[in-house]
Every structure is written in structure tokens, then in C-alpha cells.
Length: 169
Image (cartoon, rainbow, N blue to C red; front, side, top):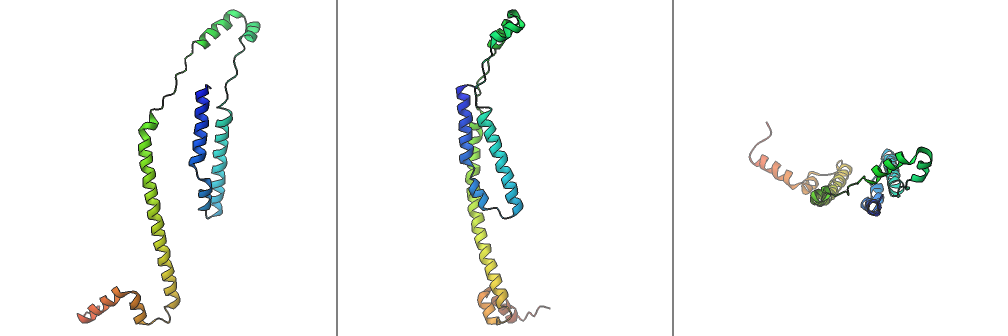
């Protein structure tokens, strides 16, 4: 692999390490099954990352043409050497990343907004759960006035029904 290819692999590995918040993901796991799957994912990621770092970032060993000349004959080896030397490996030109990077960045912004909305909704639901649990504890000893103080819209509805002489039948 050429020096620039080696650098690309190293850069990709660094980017992957910095992009994934493994500790943050581990904090949100609740069940043992999720933790087990998380450990499997992290192990697989580390294996692939290690493979990229070792196998694909090393320069290939040069071919010992003299060794083959002795065993096979110089005419055939020279023919293969000439064909090998004529191989031109094109440089990789990344045309996909510039096209999708703005879309990806927009999705990240959208994700952050959705995360904030989710956190707000979660906070609202937790408050609502706490209110319901409090209501559940007090319901057996609560008076109608106490209930209507917490739910004035119901008091207004009932008062309107009584005022309009609507008794539900």
C-alpha cells in the first residue's frame, strides 16, 4: 500500500474512534441482553479496526525476481516482471463523500433536534407519571374540590352541564 493509502487507513481509524461515543452508548443500555449485544458490537468493531490497522496498512513485500529466475528461467520471469511493472493502479478519487457530506451533516442537525425534543417529551412524561402516582396514592381520601383544583377544565365542564341542565341522558 502506498504512503497515502496507509495514511488514509490511519485517518479513517482515528475518525471512527472519535465518532463513536462508546461510553455514552453503554450508559443508556438497560437490559442484560442489550449489554451483551453492545459487547458483541464493540468487539466486532475492534476486530475490524485492528484488521484495518495491521493487514491493510502494511506495505507489501517486494517480489524477489532473482529467486524465481533461478527456479523457473529468466525468459518467463522477465515476461511476468514486465507485465507486473506495466500495471497501473489508479488512484482512488472520492466523489461520494462530497456529495453526501452535506446531507449527513443535515441529518446530524436533525438528529440533535429530535434528541432534544425526545428529552423534553421524556421529562414531560416523567412529570405526568409522578402526578398520576401521587394521584393514585391520594385518590381514596381526596375530595371533589381537591380533584377539581388540579383539573379545573373538568370542573368547568361539569358546571356547564349542570347549568345547561344536561344530565348525560
